Length: 99
Image (cartoon, rainbow, N blue to C red; front, side, top):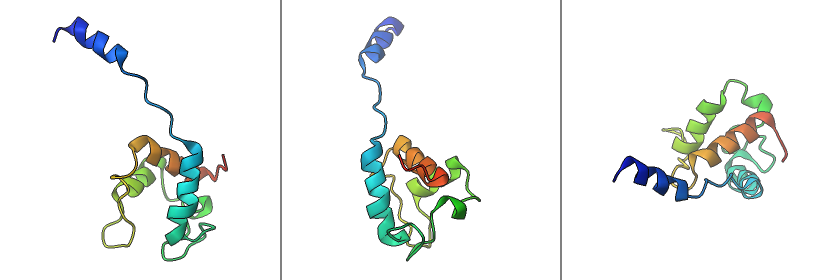
């Protein structure tokens, strides 16, 4: 494929959609909340409110969401979430932003 044909092909690909904030907020509250408590204050898993996550940077927390924590009940979400969605969740958890 020529460089020009490749550029035209890439231009035809639609831009990636932004993560669905409403669906991801629901996922955090329901799915994450099933282990971390419905108020995210802890349960089987630890507290995941912003004040409890101060030791995380967004990139590190995104990795935890995507890859889980070996040797703990925290599962990898990579099979179900895109990197953009995991980054959105990390930001949501770190800022406490109630979008």
